[in-house]
Length: 434
Image 1: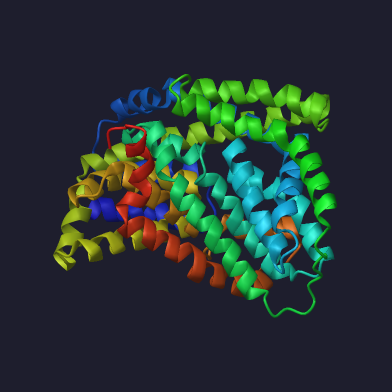
Image 2: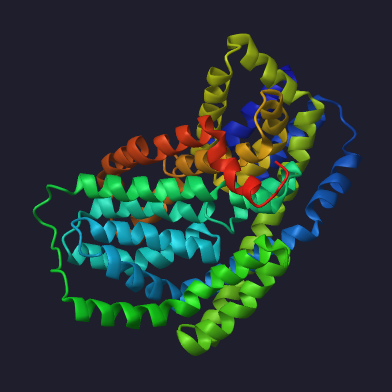
C-alpha cells in the first residue's frame, strides 16, 4: 500500500511540474519496479502485446479522416445547413454551433478537430452578430467535446480495447447522453443571452426564399451528411469493423474534400498526414506507458484497495457511484481525456463491476465525466484551446463555463449515471448483449 501511495505521488508531482504525460507514467512505473522489487523483464513484452492490437489501427485512420474533413470545407456546409433552421432565434447562432459540433463529431470522432474547424467558422459570425466573446468561446469549448461522445469516438475505441468490451456497444451507449448534452448546451446558451440587447438577430425570410435556401444548402451538405451514414451504418449494420470503417472514412474524405468542397490540396493533405502520424505516435507511446503502469497497479491490488476504501465510507450504491464520478472528474481535471481513459479503465472497471454497474453503462459515465473534466480548471485543455481559437481571455470564459457546467454538464452526468437505460437503451435495441 505504501509503495502505491509513493508511486501515485510521484505521478502527480511530475505531472504538476510539467513533465509530458507518458514520461510521468514511466516515472511512476520505475518507482513501483524499484520499490516493489519487481522483475521488469515481463513489462516490455506485456506493453508491446497490448499495443499491437489491430483495432488500434482505427485510431490514426480516424484522426487522419478528421483532419481531412477539418481542412476540406465540410464543416462550413454543415454550419450553413443548421443555420437555416435555428439561426434566426435570439441566441440561435450558439445553437447552430452546438448542433454543428455534434454533426462534425459524428464524422471526425475528434474533439480537437471539431473545436478548430467549427470554432474557426462560427466564432467570427457570432462576434459580428454581437455575441459576447467569453460566452461564445466557452460554448465552443464545451460543444466541441461532443466529438468525444457522438460516435465514432476515439475515446470509446480506447475504452473498449482496454476494458475488453464491444466497440459498437460503447459507441451506442454515448449517443443519447450526447443528444441530451446538445439540448442542454443550446438551451442554456439561449437562456443566458435572452436579455442581451447587443445581439443582432436576422429577420425571418419569406417562405419561398427559405425553401430555396434550404434546398441549396441541403444539396451542398449531402456529401458531408453521407459520411456518418456510411461510417456508422457500416459499423452498426455489421458490414464493417471499426478499423475498416476508419479506412473507408479516409477513402471517402479525400475525393469529397478535393473534388466537391475543394478545401484539400497537396499541401493540406501532407499536413493531415503529418498531424495524424504525430498524433498516432503520441497515443501509442502513451498507451504503452499506461498499460505497463496499470498492470503494476493491478498487481498491487489497487482495484481491491479502492473498492475497500469506498465501501468503508458507505454501503449506499448511490453514494458510491457519486464518489466514483467525483474521482473521474478530478482525474479529468489534471490530465487529458485519452490518458485518463487509459489509466483509470484497468483500475476502475473491476471496481465499478463489483458495485453492480454494467461496463457499457460505465463507458457513457466515463465519457461524460472526462468531457466535463476537459473544461474544468485547473488544466481544462479544451478551455484553453477554445480561448486560443476564439481570442477570448480565460477570465471572460470562466463564468459562462460555470453556467454551462451547472446547467448542462452536471445534469447530463446525473441523468447518465442514475438512469442506466439512457445509455443501455440503444445497445439493447439493436440486440447487443449488455
